[in-house]
Image (cartoon, rainbow, N blue to C red; front, side, top):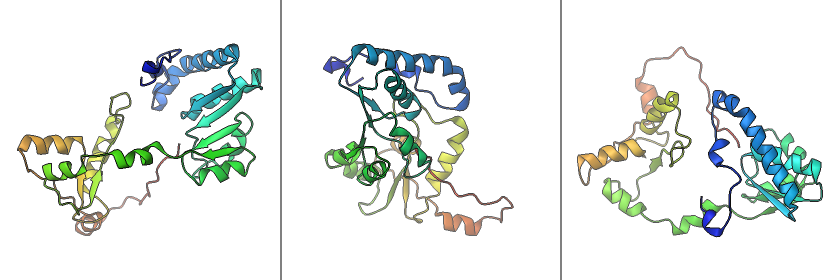
Length: 235
C-alpha cells in the first residue's frame, strides 16, 4: 500500500472486502458487514474532524451512513463518487443524507450533486494529470512495428496485480474485442497476450492487424440471435 510509507496503518487487509462476482460477494457478506462496523466504530471512537471515504460505494457508503447515524457532527467527504449522472440518479439525493461534500473527478459531476443540495467541488482526475508524465508510447510502437499515426486499441482487463483478474467466461470476448476493433481495418489491438507473442517472435514483429467489425459482419453468415448493444457498467 502506497500510504504505509507515510505512516498510515490499515485497520484490516483490503483484500478482505475486494471481491467480485455474486458468489464471492454472498460468501463474504458477514465479513464485509463486520468490516463496515469496524471502520465506522473506529471513526466514531477517534472523533476526527473529517472522514474521507474513497470509491467502492457499496462498502464505503455503508460506513458513512453508520458514522452519520452515531456521530452526525463528524464531517464525511466522498472521493471518487458513483456515476449518478449515468445511472440510478436517485443515489445523488440519497448521498446528501450521509455525506457533507463530494470531491468530483469530472467537471460536470459537481453540478449534479449541487442540484440535490450536496456540496461538491471539482478536484480533477489523477489519470488526466498523469497523462503528460506518461512516456514509452513511441518506444512501444517501434518495438511492435506500429506506425506513429496508426490507431492503437489497448485491451486492459482485470487488475495488474492479479487481485481482480478477468473472469474465465469473458476471455473469449476479450479475444474477439482485440481482433475486431470497430474503428477500421488499420487498427492494432494490444493486450498482454499479443505483446508476449510479439516479443517471442523477435524484435520488430508487429501486432496483428485487426479485422473491422463491418468487414467481419459482411463476410459472416447471417445470425438468428437478437442484437444486443453493450453498455459500460457505471460505478
